[in-house]
Image (cartoon, rainbow, N blue to C red; front, top):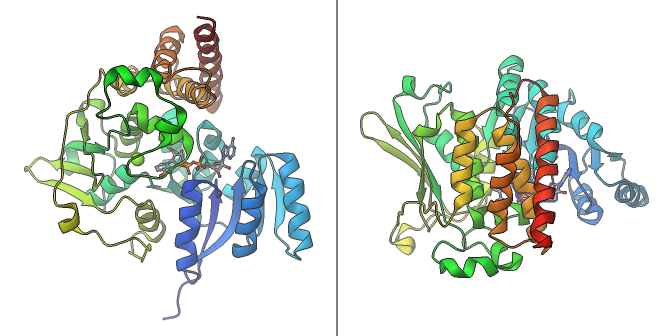
Length: 399
Ligand code: NAD
Ligand code: MG
């Protein structure tokens, strides 16, 4: 039988940590994957390098000046990649007829529209952009169901759970005999730091994750454990599990990427070295398995696996996320938007590390509850929460 035609791929957020790991997997399998479009917000030099290497049909820049520079450079190099700019162009390359798979690896709520466009167009959606699901889980899940799109998790925990669930799993835990979903968490860089020291943590310290190299926003989220909180909400939407069924287990070695606890007492775990190319290759080739360039797991070198209960007093963001999931409606959207604003302010040295949770708590308190029944409703909740969070941030700065 002849080999099937290569799968055509759009990478949203190609210059980021996930985007680069995705292209590393693509480069290992030129017979299987072909790059249709790449996107980046500002880094035209990095996107240029990627365009020269992968010759996509389209490149999309967020920033107009960066788009002009990229266009000129590609023309100078004699390449015919077409350079587009802006959010509509992102939706276009995510939903284009010729595309088979979309890697949704933009960070934050900015990734929502193109991810939704890919889901509505029935693509195989490789979802790294957890914020999109937190913001509007219902809309994305409904879009996938309506179009017949396939949603595959890239987040290592969710990819692990996906691998530990039956192949025909249909978002009904009880029917599959699932008792609990066990989300593992490394605990980040401050798991064991003296609690008094957290007030003075710098962005550099917060971004130095013990096990994973990631973008700055998710690194801060890991330090506050908001990342795990967002992942609890992500697990709720991906697997149809209520909050009570999702348990966070601190596991500092990051070798077990998550587990599923079944009614018969079996607990199925997925293990591996902490390298995002594993979940990326798993989703890209699914249901097949391909080489991801990841070092083989050496259990003798690891020797032991530890587990701890999460400390909600040390990590109030985790509790806020559980509360938002239980509150439902637009509460998770408010949580996410306030977190994005607070993390940006922290990275800019405008507020302290402990202020992040305070800003989110106050924003949630001040927000009006609402239903997630349309994209407009979600975007309005997101915009309103950002106003509340900015107001809280400016008050903190006055004190
Ligand atoms: P990153 O900061 O390294 O990269 C972000 C990418 O998004 C870049 O290509 C950037 O140009 C683009 N981008 C940023 N703002 C944009 C905007 N407003 N509009 C369009 N594009 C924009 O981030 P990352 O670590 O690769 O994370 C990407 C997503 O994957 C996040 O949602 C994160 O939570 C998730 N994720 C990352 C990891 C990881 O190991 N890095 C693991 C699990 C999940
Ligand atoms: Mg994760």
